[in-house]
Length: 153
Image (cartoon, rainbow, N blue to C red; front, side, top):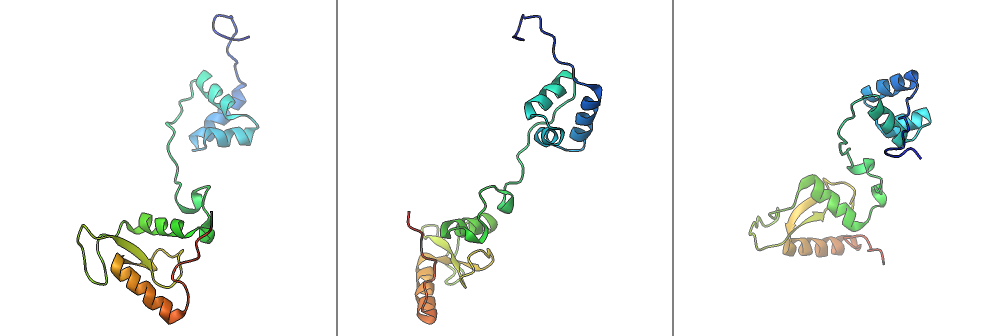
Protein backbone atom coordinates (compact mmCIF):
# COMPACT_ATOMS: atom_id res chain seq x y z
CA UNK A 1 0.00 0.00 0.00
CA UNK A 2 1.03 3.65 -0.38
CA UNK A 3 2.29 4.28 3.17
CA UNK A 4 5.46 5.94 4.45
CA UNK A 5 8.59 4.44 2.95
CA UNK A 6 6.72 2.48 0.27
CA UNK A 7 8.02 4.65 -2.55
CA UNK A 8 4.50 5.55 -3.70
CA UNK A 9 4.16 8.90 -5.43
CA UNK A 10 1.53 11.34 -4.18
CA UNK A 11 -1.42 11.63 -6.54
CA UNK A 12 -1.29 14.54 -8.93
CA UNK A 13 -4.76 15.80 -9.82
CA UNK A 14 -5.70 17.13 -13.29
CA UNK A 15 -4.88 20.86 -13.65
CA UNK A 16 -8.48 21.70 -14.65
CA UNK A 17 -9.78 20.08 -11.44
CA UNK A 18 -7.20 21.90 -9.32
CA UNK A 19 -8.15 25.21 -10.98
CA UNK A 20 -11.88 24.59 -10.40
CA UNK A 21 -11.36 23.68 -6.73
CA UNK A 22 -9.18 26.78 -6.31
CA UNK A 23 -11.83 28.99 -7.96
CA UNK A 24 -14.72 27.62 -5.88
CA UNK A 25 -12.77 27.71 -2.62
CA UNK A 26 -11.68 31.29 -3.38
CA UNK A 27 -15.36 32.17 -3.91
CA UNK A 28 -16.12 31.11 -0.34
CA UNK A 29 -17.35 27.57 -0.87
CA UNK A 30 -16.53 24.98 1.77
CA UNK A 31 -14.64 21.79 0.99
CA UNK A 32 -17.85 19.82 1.54
CA UNK A 33 -19.78 22.04 -0.89
CA UNK A 34 -17.02 21.73 -3.51
CA UNK A 35 -16.93 17.95 -3.09
CA UNK A 36 -20.69 17.68 -3.60
CA UNK A 37 -20.62 19.92 -6.68
CA UNK A 38 -17.74 18.01 -8.31
CA UNK A 39 -18.78 14.50 -7.32
CA UNK A 40 -15.85 14.01 -4.95
CA UNK A 41 -15.44 13.46 -1.23
CA UNK A 42 -14.37 16.16 1.19
CA UNK A 43 -11.24 14.13 1.92
CA UNK A 44 -10.23 14.16 -1.76
CA UNK A 45 -10.75 17.93 -1.94
CA UNK A 46 -8.66 18.33 1.21
CA UNK A 47 -5.83 16.17 -0.21
CA UNK A 48 -5.97 17.94 -3.58
CA UNK A 49 -5.59 21.30 -1.87
CA UNK A 50 -2.73 20.12 0.32
CA UNK A 51 -0.84 18.46 -2.53
CA UNK A 52 -1.18 21.46 -4.82
CA UNK A 53 -0.35 24.12 -2.24
CA UNK A 54 -3.81 25.66 -2.01
CA UNK A 55 -4.09 27.29 1.41
CA UNK A 56 -7.12 26.33 3.47
CA UNK A 57 -9.13 28.53 5.80
CA UNK A 58 -9.44 27.92 9.50
CA UNK A 59 -12.77 26.21 10.11
CA UNK A 60 -15.18 28.73 11.58
CA UNK A 61 -18.37 27.98 13.44
CA UNK A 62 -21.36 28.95 11.35
CA UNK A 63 -24.52 30.63 12.55
CA UNK A 64 -26.53 27.99 14.40
CA UNK A 65 -29.27 30.24 15.76
CA UNK A 66 -32.95 29.72 15.06
CA UNK A 67 -33.93 28.06 11.79
CA UNK A 68 -30.25 27.58 10.83
CA UNK A 69 -29.97 24.97 13.60
CA UNK A 70 -30.67 21.40 12.49
CA UNK A 71 -32.65 20.80 15.70
CA UNK A 72 -34.95 23.82 15.21
CA UNK A 73 -38.60 22.90 15.85
CA UNK A 74 -40.18 26.29 15.12
CA UNK A 75 -43.66 26.74 16.60
CA UNK A 76 -43.68 23.02 17.47
CA UNK A 77 -40.99 23.56 20.11
CA UNK A 78 -41.81 22.69 23.70
CA UNK A 79 -42.56 24.96 26.63
CA UNK A 80 -38.98 24.93 27.94
CA UNK A 81 -37.51 25.61 24.48
CA UNK A 82 -39.77 28.66 24.08
CA UNK A 83 -38.56 30.08 27.38
CA UNK A 84 -34.93 29.37 26.45
CA UNK A 85 -35.47 31.37 23.25
CA UNK A 86 -36.70 34.32 25.29
CA UNK A 87 -33.71 34.09 27.62
CA UNK A 88 -31.33 33.90 24.63
CA UNK A 89 -32.97 36.88 22.94
CA UNK A 90 -33.61 39.10 25.96
CA UNK A 91 -31.27 37.85 28.67
CA UNK A 92 -31.93 36.69 32.19
CA UNK A 93 -34.50 38.82 34.03
CA UNK A 94 -32.94 40.57 37.03
CA UNK A 95 -35.91 42.59 38.21
CA UNK A 96 -39.71 42.62 38.24
CA UNK A 97 -41.61 44.97 35.96
CA UNK A 98 -44.71 44.63 38.16
CA UNK A 99 -43.46 45.41 41.67
CA UNK A 100 -40.03 46.86 40.72
CA UNK A 101 -38.23 44.31 42.91
CA UNK A 102 -34.58 43.90 42.04
CA UNK A 103 -33.22 42.03 45.05
CA UNK A 104 -30.52 39.50 44.21
CA UNK A 105 -32.05 36.89 46.56
CA UNK A 106 -35.34 36.84 44.62
CA UNK A 107 -36.10 34.62 41.62
CA UNK A 108 -37.15 36.34 38.39
CA UNK A 109 -38.80 34.72 35.36
CA UNK A 110 -40.11 35.58 31.93
CA UNK A 111 -43.91 35.42 32.07
CA UNK A 112 -45.81 34.93 28.83
CA UNK A 113 -48.57 37.52 28.43
CA UNK A 114 -51.00 36.22 25.80
CA UNK A 115 -50.18 32.59 24.99
CA UNK A 116 -48.11 33.38 21.90
CA UNK A 117 -45.11 31.47 23.27
CA UNK A 118 -43.13 31.62 20.03
CA UNK A 119 -43.09 35.47 20.15
CA UNK A 120 -40.08 36.49 22.28
CA UNK A 121 -41.54 39.99 22.72
CA UNK A 122 -44.71 38.56 24.34
CA UNK A 123 -43.02 38.07 27.72
CA UNK A 124 -42.62 40.32 30.76
CA UNK A 125 -40.05 40.20 33.59
CA UNK A 126 -41.69 39.17 36.86
CA UNK A 127 -40.59 38.00 40.26
CA UNK A 128 -41.98 34.62 41.28
CA UNK A 129 -44.84 35.99 43.47
CA UNK A 130 -45.97 38.45 40.76
CA UNK A 131 -45.75 35.75 38.09
CA UNK A 132 -47.93 33.38 40.13
CA UNK A 133 -50.50 36.14 40.82
CA UNK A 134 -50.53 37.02 37.12
CA UNK A 135 -51.08 33.37 36.10
CA UNK A 136 -53.94 32.91 38.62
CA UNK A 137 -55.67 36.11 37.43
CA UNK A 138 -55.24 35.21 33.76
CA UNK A 139 -56.56 31.68 34.36
CA UNK A 140 -59.61 33.11 36.18
CA UNK A 141 -60.22 35.56 33.35
CA UNK A 142 -59.81 33.18 30.41
CA UNK A 143 -60.68 29.84 32.01
CA UNK A 144 -57.58 28.32 30.40
CA UNK A 145 -54.17 27.25 31.59
CA UNK A 146 -51.53 29.93 31.31
CA UNK A 147 -48.90 27.50 30.11
CA UNK A 148 -49.21 24.73 27.57
CA UNK A 149 -49.83 21.20 28.82
CA UNK A 150 -46.43 19.65 29.42
CA UNK A 151 -45.55 16.66 27.31
CA UNK A 152 -45.17 13.40 29.17
CA UNK A 153 -41.83 11.66 28.93
